[in-house]
Image (cartoon, rainbow, N blue to C red; front, side, top):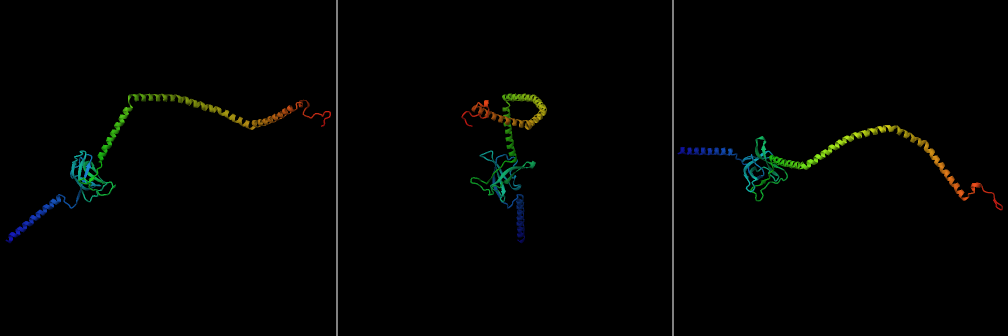
Length: 274
């Protein structure tokens, strides 16, 4: 009886040990941990090619979770819904955004979270949303595609504008303008020779006028030093003569006999007193 009891205890112990080993293997292989995760929803407006379930989710380069679901939005096929699971210690705020990135040349896609630090309040689920929604921003390839598309449209517009500018009428006008410019250039070249000749003649004339100008300066000095003082004295004498003649004329008007008897007083007549 005692032997049977011992075998039962040993068998129960072996079974319990095997069960513990199996549970430990399952726990280690499945990565069970006591870390809690939060689920977030992301709407992507571009292709998520290369992204798959269990793709990593990084926050500023640190892996904090993984992608759990990738589906199309039934109301808007242009939107892709991503469910991600992130460690609850990750500081997901109102300013956090998600961007689709690829790792180097390998093409392995992952989700990159970044906080703009514009609003540090924790992101919460709004009414009508199954999970809190993290806004998405265009990836690098999406931005390049948009830029190239805009560049292509601008080049097309420039090409159309050039084609419109270079129609037959405008080509004819441009040809006439070019012909007029060529004619003006030729005329300017011809006239430039004449202008140079005129300038040369002017320079020669200036050289020839140099001695004459020196003589003129000497003459002006002579006039200033000699002729002008003499002329001034002559004018003063003429002025005095003119005044004298004026006085004589007045006396003749008053007493014309002065011409006969002179200016001396006449002898008193009979009965006159001096």
